[in-house]
Amino acid sequence: MGFSNDKLISPIGAKEESSCAAIDGAPSIPMTRRRWIADEVSGTHAALTGDHADHLIRVLRARLGQEFDIATGAVVRRGRIVTIQEGRVEFELGDEVSVAHIPNVTLLLAIFKFDRMEWAIEKCTELGVSRIVPVIARRTDAHLALAAAKRVERWRRIALQASEQSRRAAPPEIAAPTNLHDVVSHVTSVLRIVLAESEEQILLRDIFTSQPAGEIVLAVGPEGGWAEDELQLFQKSGWTSASLGPTILRAETAAIAATAIAISELA
Ligand code: SAM
Image (tube, rainbow, N blue to C red; front, side):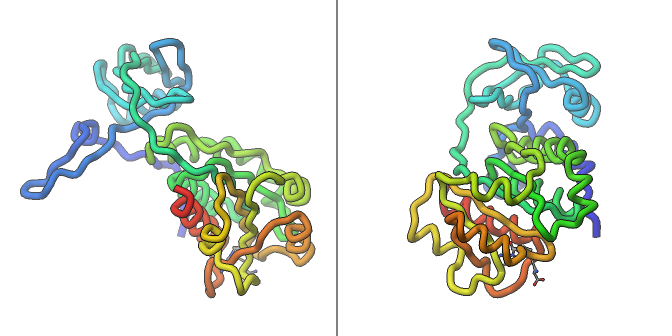
């Protein structure tokens, strides 16, 4: 089964642009306005450019006067389309839209098969992860490790689309691939948790009841799991190991489950 991300944003009709949708006879369901993360912002104007703009123009049939929520970096504002041209859609910005607080969760994700990795990046972005650092672990496939640097732009595009779809104010940062040894000992000031199927005592969710955390870093290993020396390095560097339960999860399932638990416990 593949996990293609080529069509992450499905076309919407006029109903989706409204703030509320009603099904005959059922209570109305509040819906949020479709959101775009601006490529350019200047004063009371913002723009989408390139493929980003063409997607809105062609697939979603942009029209002058249409309104969306536009994320402009620090804030999200209501935006009305004032110009449409090839590769560029401009918005006039209006009132600020309230934005939910998202806890600060960084994910160190050992590189694994790219289709599954994309799935993990998309889903962890929807859940609200702040930063993803793809790491090269001892058991990362050598070909994948070599090819990873060329994938980063695609991972960033997937994260951008997933951020707009999930109404985030900004996409997560997707860092350049880094060797595990270079990153583990440098993370010092936050709660650091390595997910390990060999951990039998401590469940991830229990860590949050014993240690209040403002900011956390989670590490998920490759398909072959963490090597023994890597687990020792985590321990020596002050990381806490945690379990996600008695079953062995695929790496992408572990990343999604750990992110969901952390975000729901910290929100
Ligand atoms: N080598 C393992 C095996 O087949 O026995 C599987 C490794 S698992 C596919 C990949 C990564 O997911 C692990 O390194 C760990 O970070 C995470 N993981 C999977 N299941 C887990 C669990 N039950 N608890 C904590 N982490 C888990």
